[in-house]
Length: 499
Image 1 (cartoon, rainbow, N blue to C red):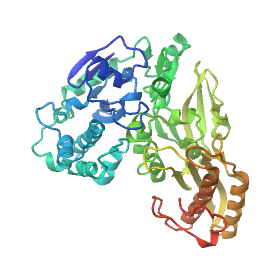
Image 2: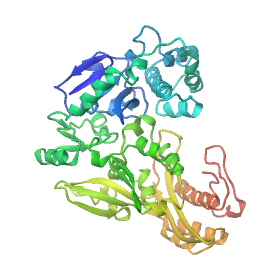
Image 3: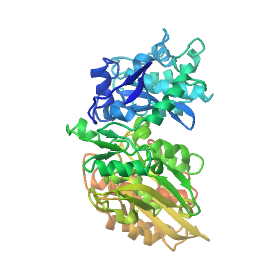
Image 4: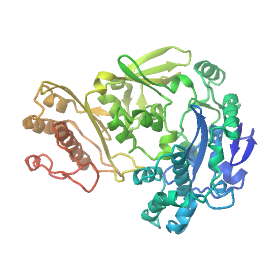
């Protein structure tokens, strides 16, 4: 495998398939500025910047090196913290952290700096300003346990002020005539992986890889799969990486459906949806962290079959179809409602993978909302997830979909509650009472470390109430610390009145 590490072209051919980028930097290259804090992609201490040419442009994104196979970065520019001050002075992100007193023990600082540097360089290249929202998004996957976040956010906001005298190593790299851009294009075009880490770029190559290596493990983003290696010390033999298969990377609006390839990342779907589907963007921004969203895929989230996954309730609300691809190239279609068969069990056969998802455009055009309840706003797992869709005609609800995550072994619908609302007028408060009563009778959540069964049930009822209020034109603030309360429903929701 060939790639660029900081300013050096590397040709590496002797790595295990699951050898992480973090281990490679520290053990093989002596670049110890990149830290291991959690080995699970949660803390951001291991953050790297990775450059790739997409659509003719060289862009840089962050990832968690502790759960990224090094071979997944073939053909890319890998940037560690040691590279930022290559021109002899501090990068604006580093200088701003110093001036804002954004570091105390310093263990997490390299990860924060690289997250901020990536934000700075991409915004500068696009000639866009840096605001607080962008800074908070960039560092959402970086945890600090001593300094506190205010000086770090201040550093992110002040980077632009210290840049005038700063020549960063990225200025030349990201120019249109950059030699490294041309080199990366050639590396990416030539990359096919290695004997233990195959990287097919189309379905024909994928079929050949599957035939040649029948025992190989499929990997895309690997943000969950690699935990088997870092947490349980599982040794993987051969990987077939499907993240670059072009037929699995599309986002296409057809005559009646929005088709999303299984290897599309959260960040790619987020970027596509910004103007068309802002409520989908709002949900995606709550999933994991920017580093995870840059690697994690839509197909992986669904195939993992976790009962607390965030996207299956969304797909269930829109009545999506899943295109399954067999190793021999044949396909079949399964509706999302039939895909899950039990805890961590799906309809996927041993010789199948998810190819794409088809979401009906008419349902996407209807009123929809997504609510995720977790202890933290960013980089956290759901306690309760609700995806809502209401179809309305002449003031009457003609179709209702209430899809929950975190309430059972699989994503489920509140079908009795749906029936209580369907056929009723939008503002029928009695129907809402009946729907909430139905939820209390049909949902039987479990208690675990994230939430009690009682809390989950109260929250599910509150979220349906919130959706009903928003459907009727009430703007309900969704951020923590701003509860809503409706005394008329206090008997239905005694334990909690906020979402």
